[in-house]
Image 1 (cartoon, one colour):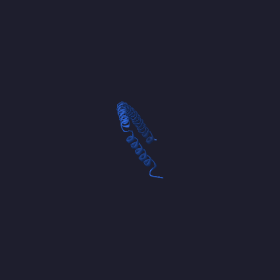
Image 2 (cartoon, rainbow, N blue to C red; image 1 turned 135 degrees about the vertical axis):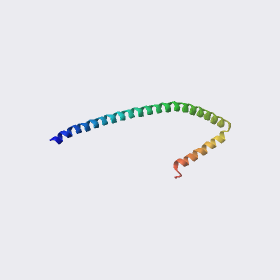
Image 3 (spheres, one colour; image 1 turned 90 degrees about the vertical axis):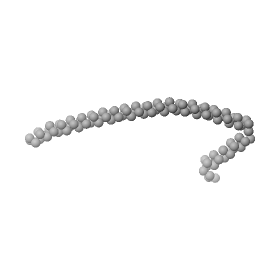
Image 4 (cartoon, helix red, strand yellow; image 1 turned 30 degrees about the vertical axis):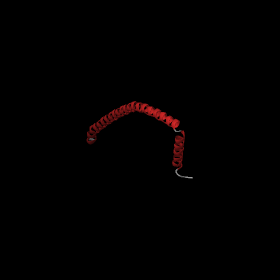
Length: 100
């Protein structure tokens, strides 16, 4: 049994090293998860701040376009009506895919 007794300390050392490696791995994974979560949160904050700016600009552009269209309809009602009808027909063909 001397061989068995010499294996026990080596086996204990291997188990201890494996446990240390597992603990280090878990700590690394937890640290990586925290960093990833922080990066995602920062990205979302940036996206929120930028999207607010973009939505404000888009709202202003939409108001400008609406004012322009109203002016065109008042100045040229027949032309704008025919243009709207043409656009509607084209969109209808595109949506049906040319099927009859």
